[in-house]
Amino acid sequence: MKPECELCRKPEEQELSSILGKEMTGDLLYKLFNPDAQSREKKSESQLLEELIRQCKNQCMEESLGAEAESQLWHWMRSHDSRWLKEYVLQRKAKEKAWQQLLEKIKKGEIQPSDLQAEQLIQHFLNQILEALNKEGWIELKPPKDWPYQNVLALYPEFTEKSEKIIAEKVLEEVFLNLKKHQDKGPHEIEETGWGSMPSSTLREFDEFQHSYDMLDIQETLIRTAVRDPVNMRIAEDDLKIRVPLHEAKSTNALLVDVSYSMRGNKFRGGIAAALAFREILQRDYKEDKLHVVAYNQRPQLLSYGQIVKLRPYGYTDIGQVIDFATELLSREEGNKNIFLITDGEPTAACHGDETPEESALRAAYMAGKADIRLNIIILDRRPELRRFCEKMARLNGTSTITYVDDPLNLKEFIIKFFVQFKKTGQQIKRCRSS
Image 1 (cartoon, rainbow, N blue to C red):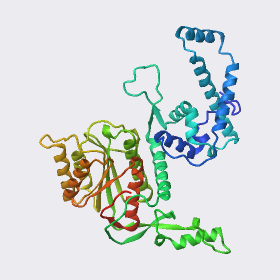
Image 2 (cartoon, rainbow, N blue to C red):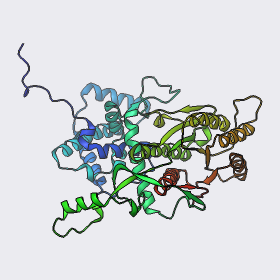
Image 3 (tube, helix red, strand yellow):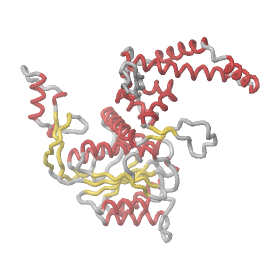
Image 4 (tube, rainbow, N blue to C red):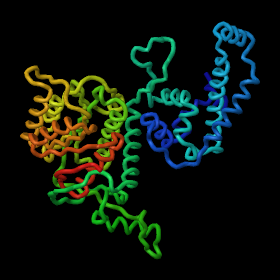
């Protein structure tokens, strides 16, 4: 049989990510993951989107629904006294038509994705965006638990392993932007010890927050300058290249994120964002270091890739069990071993029947110290009772820090600055506070 002519073949529908590009697709995913994320400063196209929807709505009003469909619609409205239904149908059809026209304008180059804001797109075309992202496998649309209407799909996005990577990149990007804006915020070192380091084969663009000038690779910097300005050889900031040091003391870290029910809201989102940022920066810049991300409530769960963005807060808090779990993980490793414990309250559960929740946590902190594992406690509540309890754990551990983070959404910045400062200087921070 003769194959179908290329010109006659129906073109395949183009995916949303290929139309909008990786940058905008990432912005959409991150805005869905963290609605409070700051929008980039871009040209506002909100008025354009609203006008596009308005024009499509007028077109839909002129189009006939069909005699039978219109008769059924008006019959339903008269019997239920719901005058809003026709407006709802028109608005939905208008948005669908406007969305398709917007994509066509982007394909033709009449509108650039870089001129749009993810927040505005989600505000005007939430359903269309969710359906497109679901089709590409970035999210899964599932009804919430105990959803009573089996024939109605509630647009509830669950992020997939495919989307976790791009969300983590956006989280880390926001971390560095925020740290550059507020360089006086975060941990402050009081007592330090250090050790030497040797250069690695990893080259990076110079970043004033992450790097110091003694890390500059002069040869690579001059090569870039020569390519850009071969006559005058004037070094520009964009020419600067650093060689990431390979510290003699590598670290293995366990980030313990409280996902009990009391963490719901910003505390939960802050903890998840911190885990994503911590894992991403190690994969990108500190491949010699290791990180175990553990979610805990009444039981610990070691998270693999794709599982962080799927977490939901529920259950009680068993701090003793999760510290024991982390101690067992880290005791198999060599070098510096650190536990970062994130919590908003005292323990409310214990897996050992002969111990109270407090006794279990205090014993676990002591045993971690005996195994030469440093316990860094990060609390998200100012209650004096929680502070006193954490101080007991710190004393028993022996080499512990206690930090209070006022805004849980800043937790990712604190974690990253703490770790980067440690790796940047090769110094062990003895005690810190968040300001």
